Length: 273
Picture (cartoon, rainbow, N blue to C red):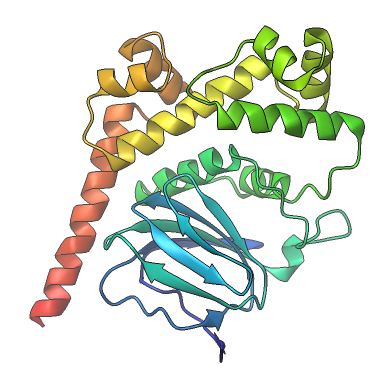
């Protein structure tokens, strides 16, 4: 395996915004994707927005589908093999100065809800909405919290694992207590202290994330999506998605479709030329 340093990404960069500590790019995979072994000279956080691709490293092979997050360490050799052409990936390149004594590049902690913030970045980037660097840095640094060190952290991670594994069941506090063998009051205490939000708020964000990913990747109606993702009705979903993401579900779908159409048009122009 002869991995080479790659200065550019596989696929095509269609949107890009640079900040002091990081750069955000939207990448479209197409038939021009090169799947050779390579590495990058920066730490990368990648999330699939639309479609999928196969990630191959010296340690594992995994399919990255919508909602999946992958952190590539600086210098880590890997391959990106397309599964769905015209897949869309958001990539955050982290400069060395992003890391400090408290933020270690080796302590990336995968929290399912980090993806919700990354999708927010994707929407803001394709709409040219002004992003706030300080807010973005804070959100990104939450993904590098370090290793679990307290009993609160350990218990909270156990709770999060159950909530994410059973996201479409939305287990009650009593059910969580039964599964984890922890008293309901203790569950609430551990979770709120470690995560900073209540279990109800965490579950609400899981629903929003799932709904947005379905909106981006299917043609299902909003009523179907609301039902599948556990909202009381379509209006409830629209209200919560708009409140958290800043866009209505319908607007999110239109924005993504327009972005895809623009990219396909550019591909056709390049082909004709």
